[in-house]
Image (cartoon, rainbow, N blue to C red; front, side, top):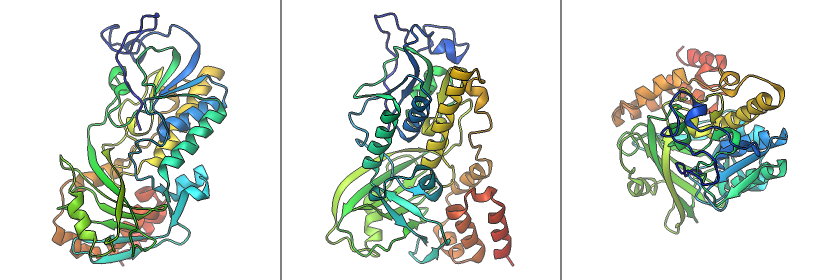
Length: 388
């Protein structure tokens, strides 16, 4: 969900983005000097992260503008919209926009499977277009001005700029900040009238169809979502994957009602992700798990943290965001190491072999259910116990 259209110079005196106008010495000069104080914060992109940041800024009485080239918050959604429990607890989304899913069914390449469960833990499938509209209304109710159908064109008039414009952030490039250098390519289709899908998150390991990641079938809100992602260049073979899962689920009456695709950054948090007057959040900042590619929870938390840091700086003399946010964005050290292992594309025969082993199952439980994943002491205790 991007809202970017940079690199223009306005005739009314505003200064455009772009290093050709100023020496590349800092985010401030690369992005141009502020000409008017009519706006405190400009946010590029009404994404999960952008809307969370907008709400946090506006709720603290900052004059906040969001530039979004889409005409509607629910238009062109590029994410499956699956919420982990931690994100659901933080958001409290309307129940009618969600479907609770308990447990994971993990399939090997041969389609043998194991069930993984954690009492008290769940995922929420969402009606993602409506969820985005709900988040946008919350930001607008707080006082944010969302300019729907208007790409940000560089005529900067705010003290602070926030890049919430996705994995190919042009804000990042023209501010001289870090950029995402590793990504997965994901594709997904939505179907009505699929039968036989148990209320679990169905996850498929297959280094031929989804090298470096997984395939998935999600029982969603009124639909079934089927997709896969790959670390190899090119579009993943969704039709072949559909043929494969049709041996498990009844697709005979299924109707395709939607599709999407896009890039998923998996290189970890970019460096630097902020200067004194420009901050990246969400996918633009790379705050997506390199292992699971989950990014909604971190998008929401990074957007909110950036909004609070900006308000503290502008209203109360707190440190600038590049200082205040140090240590608040995840580093993903362990998960980046595991990403490197996944990118070796282990043979399918090996994946089938390890699927039923106690140690592998404990590792999978850790990845799917523990609040802090491999950094959790509970996770390591479970892994040790599995090897006894």
